[in-house]
Amino acid sequence: MDRDLLGIQEVASRLGFSFKTGQIWLDEERMMLMHSSAMATLRKELIDSVGFDRARGIFTRFGYASGVRDAEIVRKTYKNLSDLELLEKGPLFHSLEGIVKVTFNQVKIDIQKGQYFLDGTWENSIESYIHHNLYGVNEDPVCWTEVGHATGYVSAIMGKFILHKEISCSRASCNFIGKPIEEWDDFENDLKYYQTDSIFEQLLSLQHQVDDLRASLKERLVPADMVGKSVRFKQTWQLAEKAAQTSTTVLLQGETGAGKDVFARAIHQASLRADKAFIAVNCGALPNDLIESELFGIEKGAYTGAQSSRAGRFERADGGTLFLDEIGELSLSAQTRLLRALQSGEIDRLGDTTTRKVNVRVIAATNVDLAEAVEKGTFRKDLYYRLNIFPVFIPPLRERKEDILILAQRFVEKFTAREGKRIKGFTDKAIDMMLNYNWPGNVRELENVIERGMILTGQDELIDASTLFSFSLNFADKEQNRVLNTIGKVENKSNGQAVDLFIDHFFNESITLEDVESILVDAAIKRSEGNLCAAARTLGITRAQIGYKKKKLTDIQ
Image (cartoon, rainbow, N blue to C red; front, side):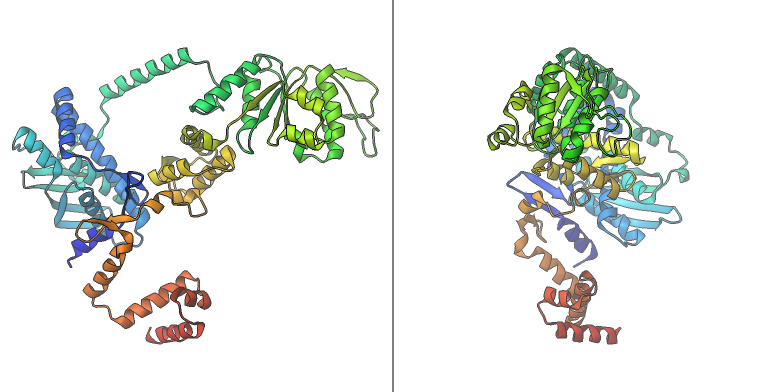
């Protein structure tokens, strides 16, 4: 089997088909099949509407983006490749995508020295096929996406702009040359196709402005921290917004991490008290013997160690909003004092005889069932009724899936500003996993996952699935059990495609059975980090057997 066929088979083995979900995956990138007739329609409409030159620019930039993405996948997937092997992967990916077969006539590449030259041939180009069917044989360059892909891919792996040009084109094959832009005598005309069309940019900018104006007329301004577009989110915020216009006590209910603290701050920001203090206290984080002094304050000498007077949270929130998180954790004594403060607007510091009047709007939050707590006798019934005047239930993240990606992007922006690291976004697999995960920790868990992904992802890279989750969560992989076999047919992975590739490789390289055994033993020991017992279990042999084989392997080396 020749090297090219082995190469394309290895790349094809990374392609997975999920018929149940209607998805095709190339590692973490979602792929698609498209009718050539549909692409022909798109090409013709673009040429007819904006002209050859602008259409060429669109397809060139489209190809360039595809080439850059293929280079990112290759660099992440394949380690320790030679410069030539790294270059060869790009055409293999392009061939797998059904675009063109690439042959190298003359090639020179040295990434470290920045040296590159390629004279190549495109065979069976889908773009040439479409264009010549539409407009007949044309001597001008028509393989626009292929040129863009080659330029994008090589530029990405070289770390500098490498311009490729189509020298000649026919229905059967096309010749192209690539080299650093500074080595071309005439590059200005080609370079313009990689630059965004300013007219289109202006039109898009105006359209976005119109859309923003329309949106601002339809909806009232939502505080910046309130992120979401799902129906459940909008209904919840509309209810909370009505409460914000009053001084009514609000009870926020929902699971841990659902965003009750964010809603509380948003209600405060949308209220007439927005210019006053917002004071938050976590009732579950303070010991029972301190919670009352924290809420209502103390006078000097109130108890041993009280060496000075101190205002409590109610006084500090005077004129503004007091947010009591995890209110179900309050002691019965603190509940009694809180009920009085809510009913009369008056508080007494511990150890003081003076009653202080306060104007405080209270927002309480809980993730426990207060009605059930009342039945158990751990929560005062009269306080429950006083808090439950305006209940707002915040839905869990799994019930508002439309908000996941918006929140994820918001967290990326937050951590980008904090860490000074630019992230290009998420891979398709990462997006698929986020949308299919149940999120038991809700928005807080999503934020933590994005922070982990940001830490593990390099500058200007995409956050992938493996960096988001520390555990196996391959939803798509469960359905991705159909792949391409050696003759280009789709079959189940269990049918032995991986085994076929393994056997073909060893037969073509004339590797002996003893060599195969040595490779497996060495790999098992390395994957077990030198633990011979674990390596033996992996291979299904005894500790003594693998010890013997390891010694034999060492003697041979």
